[in-house]
Image 1 (tube, rainbow, N blue to C red):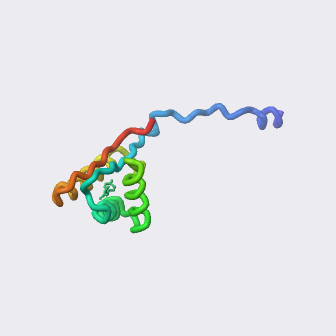
Image 2: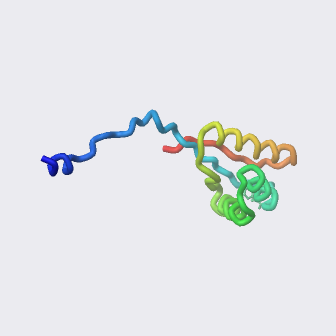
Image 3: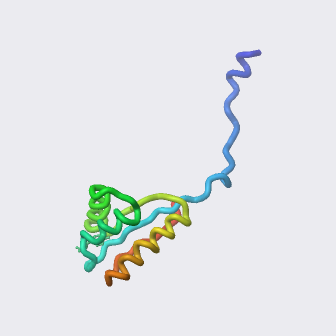
Length: 102
Ligand code: TYC
């Protein structure tokens, strides 16, 4: 009897509604924004270290885009706005987007 119970497979499934969709913040390359400025924005807005910021910046620079962070929708959208506001203020066309994960 005790063995039967122990061998029963776990059938409980977590309801999907408890896990809201996560969003990817994507950084896009352009020809005008200085590398140092991109790294500075990543450090200031996403609290990245110099090394992490430089790595993400160089990935976008070389490949065209890079994932910066994966987080909740409101945080992703707020940070995209903050980063693009910094760039706009400085006169650079830096672009970031927040996209839902598949
Ligand atoms: N390509 C830019 C330059 O050569 C630097 C850059 C890197 C811009 C990453 C945007 O997301 C970016 N000055």
